Image 1 (cartoon, helix red, strand yellow):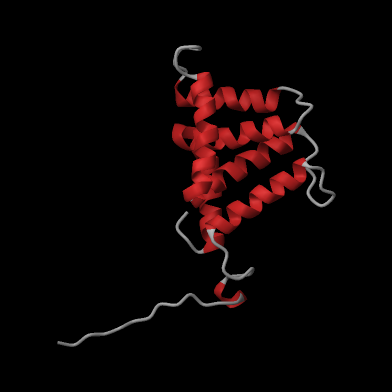
Image 2: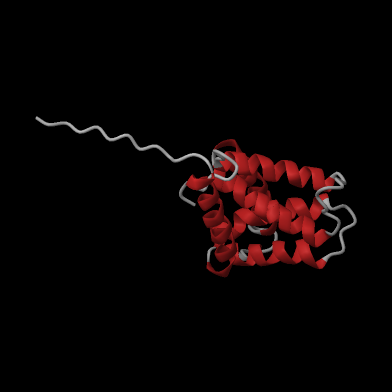
Length: 156
């Protein structure tokens, strides 16, 4: 019986498209969360100075958390569960996941929030609902997933 052993190794360095070295989805999730926190706290390097920017940072960070899996996904899904519970169920009828996504988007972007943490949390929550709702909501989430997968060399 003939046995062949093949070792597959990812090429390192810029030639292997690893500009930052080995970065995992968890690394992207961690970095995005830290940047969101720094921006909300008034960093001079990361400017999150409007409710719209806070919501977008939340959506991207929430998507990366969900894609990373594990504890990151648990955090994102916990926030997503709160919004689905608050906007769906008995209180407002059953708007469906698409309606919940629409409502979260309206709440995050339509109001002139003074505290930027609110649209950021709404964005984190919306990322989960967008992924579950599918349709047009899933397009943006899937783009973020594909880009993250390409950056890390993993399946997005």
